[in-house]
Length: 180
Image (cartoon, rainbow, N blue to C red; front, top):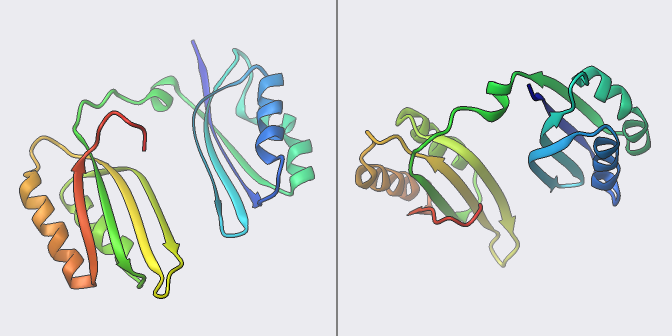
């Protein structure tokens, strides 16, 4: 039976972090099955879903990563997972992308995501950034899984109304097969 772990790492961004982490994982015979990595401001962060070889635990892998942790001054956390936690149940729900554009202000993420939660809509991916212009442009891209009982026309109208209240444009589209 496969052994799984969720690994997170955070630290000041610099070249070589991903190569160093993935090198230790390769030497430990781990497979990166899913990942998200990004630079946020001056920092690097990653989340990795790992398949570990039989007998290797998260704490043993953590020990193997000590040199990388020290070299790059990273905070690393590894949580062992059961196979069902790692793979999750297959979800056969329609996936939509929600695009939000407008002037930056506090509360945009909260207002939109609170409404989605109230409708039992699950967020599977969320990205925000500010694009420099004469007036900085705030952009938020959200990937969501929408339960079949949710009226999408109503949800779109409600999200657009929230957008008008907070001064942003909101667009909702059925996601194609391309990755987010």
